[in-house]
Length: 247
Image 1 (tube, one colour):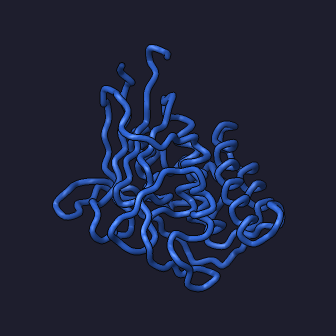
Image 2 (cartoon, one colour):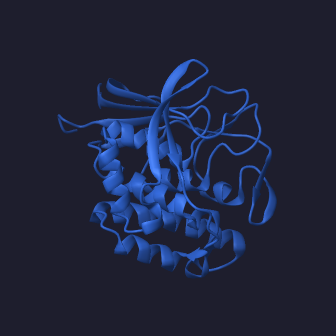
């Protein structure tokens, strides 16, 4: 292992979403508002200009960070081919484009399996929306800049409940999430609803996350992140850590 090797650690007691990954990655990378705005504009999608802000918040007396994304409603249904063209036309680095396309490929394979289609016939609904494109492309771009050699995530919490989507009411976890959780360690929590979003699990797989207990490391940076939903009966938020491996 290289002397300057670093490990990125993510712990997800509440669960994880795309906007939480975006917030945590941006904080670990030390990006300021100007740098984030430039990164958003590098996607070359006019509707995303000025849509993102990440602010410090206080939830139940605990300080952390939270993303706010303001976008006009849209009803576009984009195909995997459409998404690849958007990524290709962006000004993202080659590494970021590769990661973003890999995340959408995970989503496309899951949707294809659920609906009995081939990957190129898949049309994205919720995950084809601009906010999901923003989350996936920016997380990919930021991760490409973080100096880490390994990425370790906790096992993921799941629970029963329902999700409302394009196809009506579906049991939690959502079908696409269940498809992508194949081979991923999970555990049940005493709560209800969505704890892992399709965007988040697709990103975690594309970024090569290993799902395991805390690794041995010397901590250098810590960030607490809150999502848009407070999940009942579990600790709130996610923890991002960057450190140097030991032992």
